[in-house]
Image 1 (cartoon, rainbow, N blue to C red):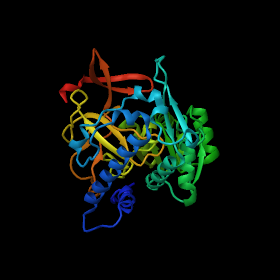
Image 2 (cartoon, one colour):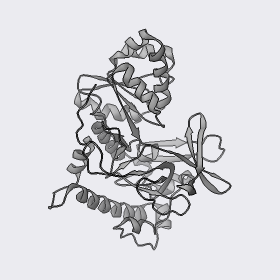
Image 3 (cartoon, one colour):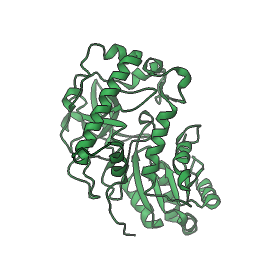
Image 4 (spheres, one colour):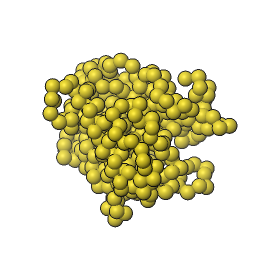
Length: 367
């Protein structure tokens, strides 16, 4: 099915948040707004968070360039075990706390806290990103593991899409052949939000079972999220079902939403006014050139409950050079290229999935 390429839906949404044009082109207005939000985030975190009150004390927070960021300290996943130290609002104003235990670790888990406003901003992003795949009068089924928690992804999608007339229903996260068949027959969804391993299970069924393929023919769009999506699964589902499969980048630390592909499928268009990303050499901590792989380092903007400043995600990615084929003038984040893990004190790049390590490249110093 041939689809018309138009500038990413994210552009109009971001431009509307940038305020008056003031004679500046959109990319320059966006960059100006991002740094204004960044400076406000830094000052608020220093003044209200005990953690950042200590780590940012005495530092120049008048940040205007990417080079200015280099004087600020990193935040690590291990730091988040002391999540109360990060809070910028009273504990009673926290709407949701998410606990993440590192696999195989007996250390204290890390925790993330979100306010009602934080969750509402993510719902706004979901409304924009999902408009590429589902429309009023249609049904969206959410399969993602853990999405059914109160104020989780399913609730946020429901809040985002119900005003547009989209029905959001939960599916069975186990995604067995039996549960997939039952869910599809019961709900007849036009769109799915699912993890790559769930989509791989779906692809295996539609590939070998023509009846199952007929059952799944209701699907017009799929949003993949939560892991690295194999191209053969994406292409296979599009061919078998005649649907559009787009990928999403996000994590709990981004309040579940980060960036989405447009129909060009050429990188992620980001929530630029909610997330300030750097891509750095994991050893030197310095920025890498566009197109080269580095560690994605995250600073949250406009985060009310628990802002994160220069948080080392461990994810490996790159800034894609050149404009997007969709016509957007904004930069895009590449698909994830793996995760950095430390061996003998030095970072190495591995591709990591729920089942563990499945591929490995050379140490990061070659990038």
